Image (cartoon, rainbow, N blue to C red):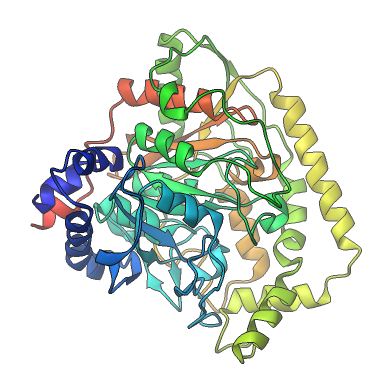
Amino acid sequence: MKLHEYSSHDATGLAELVRKREVTAVELVKLAREAHDYLNPTINAVIEFYEDAESVSGSDTGPFAGVPFLRKDLRASEAGRLQERGSRLFRGFRPTVESYYVQRARAGGLRIVGRTTMPEFGRTGMSESVACGITRNPWQLDRTAGGSSSGAAAAVAAGIVPIAHASDGGGSTRIPAANCGLIGLNPSRGRVSGGPDEQDGWQGRTRSFVVCRTVRDMAAALDVLCGPAPGDPFVIAPPERPYVEELGRPTARLRIGVATSPWGEMRVETHIREAVEQTVKYLETMGHHIEEMSPPYVSAEYRKLQAGMQAMGFDTWLDDTARKLGREVNEQTVEPVNLEQYRIAKRLPLSCAADIFEGLRKIRMDVGESTKHFDLLVTPSMPCSALLHGTYSTTNENLTVDQLLDSDAALYQYLAVFNVTGHPSVSLPLFHGADGLPIGIQIVGRFGDEATLVRVARDLEEAIPWSARRPPVFVKNNE
C-alpha cells in the first residue's frame, strides 16, 4: 500500500483491508509513521510517536482491527506511557493505571501509536503551549487547530491517522473538529466511561471520544467505546442496537430547533449564519419541521459560574502533582494565566461549591425546559472561523483569567452549555467559507439519543459529502 492509498481510507475501510489480508496492521503503522515523518515538522500535531509503535497490542478482530490511533495527552491513560498533559509540571509523568477507554480502544482493534499535542491542562480552545509549542491548522498554518484536542484534530485532518482520541469538557472535541473540518462527537454523559480514575472530571462535564472523518467511523467508535464500568457515577440506558446498524435505518420526521441568533457576547459571522441556514434548507427538504429557537440559557449566568468551575480543586490537583513529582508550582512549571487561576483557587472559599452546583442545576433546568419540545437542535459550532495563533493564548503573560474566561464564554457559547446538561452533540464539517476554512455545524440530540444523531449525520453526509475534501497540508499532497 502506498501512502496516498493509506490516507484515502477511513478507519473502517482500513480495518476491512486488514480483515481481507490485503494489508497488515504493522504495514499500516509503518505508513502512519511515514505520514508523521512527512507532516509533523509542519503542523506539530504529535508530541511522541512511539519508538515501538509497530509492536503495540490490539485486537485482530475488532471493528478497527489494525488501525493506527493517536492518544490525546490527557484523560485516557496507558500504564507506563508518558502523559504530560501539555505542561512542564507533568514532564516525565507516567501513570500506572490503564483507563477503560484505552482497554476498549485496544479491544476494538485500534493500535495506539503515539500521543498528541494540547494546550496546558486542556484549559483553552487554542492550540499552543510552552510544553508542546504551536500546533498548526492543516487548512491554514497561521490559524489555530483549536483545542484542547489540538494535535488529534490536526493529525486526522492531515491524514497521519484516520481517527484519534479526543476529550471534551467545554467544547474541546467540537472546537478543533470545527476548525479542522472533522467530525467531533461529544457523547451523552455516562455513554463512555472515564474510569477507573477519571469518571467525574470537571463536575461531570468531561467526556472522551474521538475525532474522525466519516459518520460510519463515528458510529463504529460508539460501539467500541460505549458502556458503563464499575464506579461510574453516571449510567444511562444502553442503545437499542449497535450504532452501526443505525446507518441503515430511516430517519423519522423530527422537530428541530435552530439557532441563528447569538447565545453569548460574540456575534455570529455572516458566513457562519448562512451555513446554518443552508443546513436547515437541507433538513427541510428531508421533511423535518424547523423552528427558530431562543437562547436556552443566560450567558451572563454561565460566565459567573466559570471562574469557580475552573478554579475549584485546581490548586489541590496541582499541589498533589508537584509533591509527587518533586517540583513546585511556579513560573517555571505552569503557564501565566493557569498560574493566576491556581492562585485564585487558593483563595476560593469552600462555600462557593454550593453556589456552583446550584448554578449548574439551574442551567440544566433552563436548557431542559427550553428544548424539551425539540428532537434535535442545530447551531453553529463556532461563531467565527479559526482564529490566528496567539489569540487568547495561555502563554501570553498579559492575558488575565477574566479575559480568558470572557473569550471562552463568547467563543464557545453554543458548546460548553451541553457539557453542563450532558446532551450528546456533534460538530459536522458541512461547509467551507470563502476564506478556505472549514465551517462546523453542531447537531444536538436528546439526552441518551446518539442513535438519532448518527442517522441525521448520515443523512447530511449523503446530502453534503465532505470526506473527500482535503486541506493543503495533507499526506498525498506531500508525496
